[in-house]
Amino acid sequence: MEESHTADQRPSPGSTLLLLHNSYFVCKGTQYHQVSGCAMGSPVGAVIAELVMQEVEEKALETSPVRPKWWCRYVDDSNACIKRDGVEVFHSHLNSINANIQFTVEMPTTTMGKNSIAFLDTNNTVNEDGKIEVGVYCKATHTSKYLDFIHTAQRKTRELS
Image 1 (cartoon, helix red, strand yellow):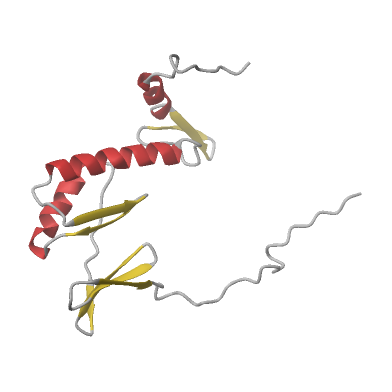
Image 2: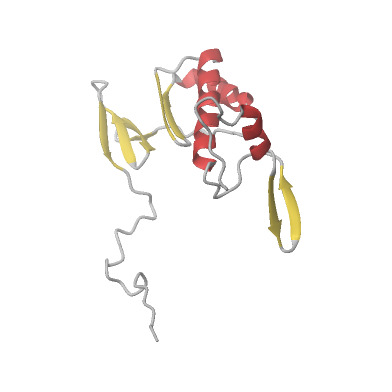
């Protein structure tokens, strides 16, 4: 019998924490207890990750000694506009919020006198007039080769007896 909850009988935050702190898995015959984070592939993983990132983001932005001009985040990719002399302070502050979540920094590159940086498959360039030009970003390893829709590697067949 499946348990159901009415609006007044939702699972408590304590039961959610119990669920998150009791992840076990087996590898090569040995059982392990995962002490931090949500189990990979868990149906609640994406929701929990988003909630945790929102909390980290909110705390970081409220308490930071450096205020970004903007802050954008999608899942675990973020983009911020910060004066160069404040980047290291802001980066250290972000990494001090949660020891299990560590951010990396990617600085803009200058090509032909313009600063640009990749974010979520876009290339963002600041023009001389201060406007941002957005284009498509492809990694250096991008080959523009794709499998045909009816490629045999994607075809799944089964013989019926």
